[in-house]
Image (tube, rainbow, N blue to C red; front, side):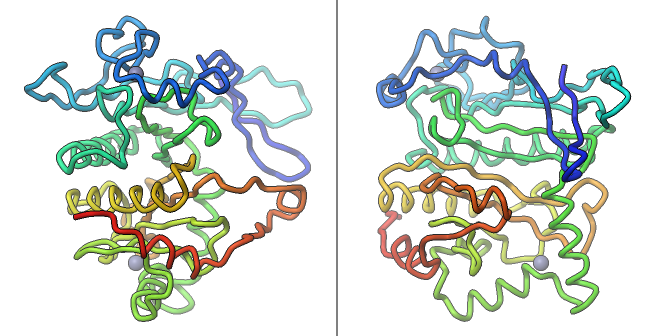
Length: 331
Ligand SMILES: [Zn+2]
Ligand SMILES: [Zn+2]
């Protein structure tokens, strides 16, 4: 069972989930070998290995074998659970049950598939499942916020090679989301504008940090990127929550192109992406504007970042954007 523990010194919360330590892990050095397998008999996400799954929540069907294009399954080693019990109090510390839902989206039946090389049809199916599951999980009566994320590569925290993303819904709004809310709310009340709409206007006019775009979305390196080659995919139209995403083919197309650019310029780096989207209570708030934030895992934060919470980006966002923009992602 999971619990949320509060640090008395910083006031920060942490999810303590010892059961996650039991996850199967790729053996060091085996990632490259595993990636070459089209089917892995030991992989719980490969077709035919359903007995290793805790269940199947939803499926996108297809006519060809194995009959499904994408699948949603419960996380076998969840960070939070809906029935987490109240932790036994020690009389000194603040702790609460780690309540929530933790799902895995298996993005392809093929072990060696990659978002960067998927067809338009495949990518559209994947993004469609992202939106549906985020809607469903955020709609749960116990949910306050839901985080959709993807860890790619062992160094970015992926414990399995098979292409997948995850969603964790919590009964509290996590600190990072609350901080974005608070900042944006204040900005909106001070200036009467959504900060991201305003930033987008400035970025599109300058073009210096724009990497790619289509009719509905822009991919850019943020002005104050915290990491080298950090990227944001932003809807051009003010849109509060990813659950409102309507232009799925346009978003899927841009995501695919950005991943191709990243792979070609940095040589297939590990990365994390996360959808920063309004918590449930603020789903109609004017100050929230969702974005997908992608961070390649190319530098490790050191002691200063740990001690100050102030990231040092050892690269230039403008140079990063130029390099990514100059790659030809194909049509
Ligand atoms: Zn697999
Ligand atoms: Zn906006």
